[in-house]
Image 1 (tube, rainbow, N blue to C red):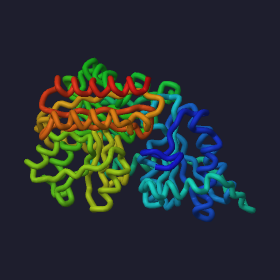
Image 2: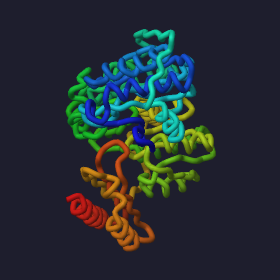
Image 3: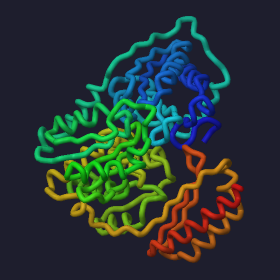
Image 4: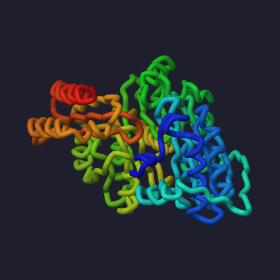
Length: 435
């Protein structure tokens, strides 16, 4: 990672560590890397997204590039449209699951793939200078949501969700228009929560990080199941009719089992991360499937999938990549494909999920200097000690968040109480070091 880019593009609090100047430099850098590029820009609903879209556009046009601003769109739609409409770059203004005061900048290449670490570092080298072309580029606003919506509809059978009642938590984010219309078009009765263009409330007590909002909706409406997206809809978490949560690990397994049966799971291999529950690996092995782990971050999952030409990967957080269709995480697509399995198999989420997960304790600790804490010798020694105590079946993971000033702690073992105990022990040390 460079000085600006993290695990998922550039991320920060708007006006502090993510400024209009940085956004303009990103746009201008794209015009320095490629002469007169065609750039597609979209965003989530955050109040700062419009000005950051325009700032990126200014940078591109100063350098001679042309911009199409498609305004509020899910992240995956920009990936898909950048490739299919032959743009040189796609830019998404979004901080994904982060609170409203945050924003971010993600960049897709002409192939629909996110820039890798080396490409982001190379782009950063142009941030220190501004190129002004003798002939500035053009700017056009154009609603392309219909093209993305029609593409997703083309992947599904007509009226396949007839008879199903589905709740959608749209996080007051980028999916607020598109997701309900697709599910309704396919025959579902749809109830929506947090479904407005309210950037000041994006992800607040709703969406994939606040699943209780969806649970309440499903129970209140008597729905068969529901889905919660994050602010840019690249994550999805499901909830069964009785309120049980089905996170990215569970959805990944349900999809893998179905794809294996249908012969579409390339090399019978799934890509997960170091956070993927070991119970998923055991269950996949029973299905004669392999699990490959990567570092945490959907772009690392995608890189592994591309390297080995694999069709399915994902994270516990709800990033699921169905690479045969779109080359990045797409919460709406994932929700559609899981719903399709439910409709065709005539089974609920409980019956589709037959894996046994190991208990995991997950704790996030807000810190001022995450790299200082995570590189602490005291933390290293404690993690080593706990790992030895949990061997051979347990796992410990302590890492710095790639998008926030947090330390993320995960302990996995056969006992929920032991996992919580050791996770709290690490948390206490992190708090002590921070003080």
